Image (tube, rainbow, N blue to C red):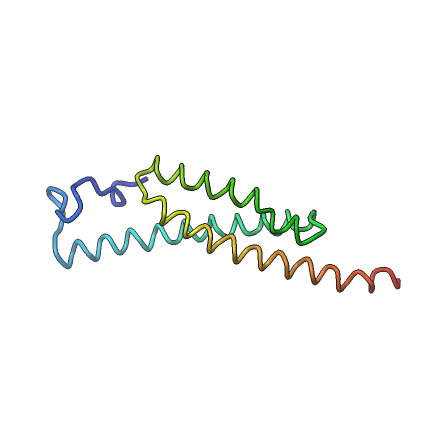
Length: 122
């Protein structure tokens, strides 16, 4: 991680020797924009893996996998805690991600099932 993304001063106080006020806000917003770019790239990669995984799933129960969801959310909670992030933010974010990716998987499964009779007719 570059120094431009590190914030070492206590919350609410500008780091020593750094810009302050509007200039610091602009710096930090730039850092957030860079982080968002990296986060989206990683989420896109995660989505591609989920899409490939879905090709191996045959029913809704396998898509929903509540035990696996619990395992992922527990791991995310622990990772957030270790990295100094409020766990409820990480878990809430992942709940939303999992909900959307589950919906995507169910749509993929339904499309695959709908196409199956066409394959059988050939």
